[in-house]
Image (cartoon, rainbow, N blue to C red; front, side, top):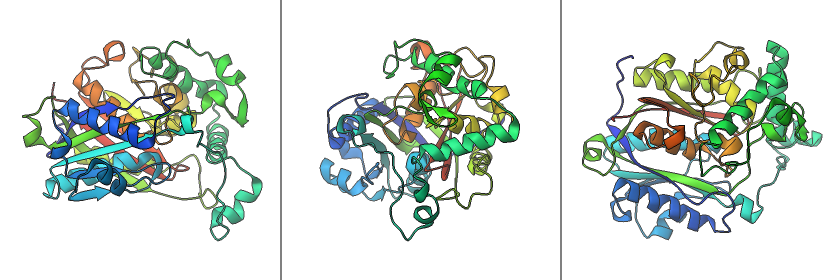
Amino acid sequence: MSAARGSGVAIVGAAECDLGVTDSSILTLQSQAVTRALADAGLTLADVDGIATTGVSRFSATQLADYFGIVPTWTDSTFAGGSAFEMFVARAAQAIEAGQASVVVISFASNQRSARSRKLGGVHEPWIPEAQFEEPYDMLYPLSYYAMAAQSYLHRYGGTREQLAEVAIAAREWALLNPKAFRHGKGSLSVSDVLGSTMISSPLTAADCCLVTDGGGAIVLTSLERARDLKQAPVQVLGYGERTTNTSFTAVADLSVPGARGAVQDAYARAGITAADVDVAEVYDSFTITAALSVEALGLCGEGEALDFIADGRIRPGGSHPLNTNGGGLSYCHPGQYGVLLLVEAVRQLRGECGARQVPGAEIAVAHGTGGILSTHATVVLGGSR
């Protein structure tokens, strides 16, 4: 393994709130996630002086601080979709190293399934390009945009829908090992199951699309020095990187080449590792194509090779490149923005807490978030100390 470098910051707590169908308010779910993560770390709300959160409805750190009755010295409410939480790790690490905060909580929660608040629709502000050039075609947002990316990728590289289905199939196999997964106990998926499910936006069927659930989670960060005296073995923040590339698809030159590669390269460089050092990868799988593109961005294979790479069980339990070990957004949980749960699972894998789905000897984990319509990309490299 390469000689990893890393920051002087560690994740010391990680937890989920209630998942699935909760009939709870967003603040209740946020409270569950934060207090459970703090308990996991052996800390309390009195220790927290930094908060980072966002939401489907732009839920802010201001609201959360007010709800908890604390006055943070540092906050971040950047709205960047599903990658925001990986971006928050970078900002939080920088704030802790600069002395602006000592204990930072990054959290998210949504009750979109219970509240039936998830809506597929376009952008209606007439003065922005998406409304002028995309909305008139009544595309499903964001589904149809990812469908275009999938169609472009399959056309360019000669892949098939059967090959792409492996992403969903592998995710389900991991979910069957995770009692908290929404699809736990629902049985394995086959290629015919994925291709035969309802066509939503060609070439993506319902089985190619993430869940719509309640849920969320939180992680707690502090200095590595302080972390060594806390309840859990620290998980060190080794590196991070990000890219923001586009709002709409109108001006995107190539749908099959997202900005994720630059984010990954920066994270690896900061961490002092290469793709060969990664033991477990947690990537945003809003759709099967999102995960496939992320596999390439992580450097696990070459451009246009993802569908061949994931064949033969390589990303399934027992495979050589474990991917989305909790079941992912496709079979575990997707509360509208999934990025914080990538971090929760990465931490648990590095602490050896995952039971039947544990990746043996995991020392380096990568969490890679994607937001918008392949718009924002953020990568975090974590290292365990077991």
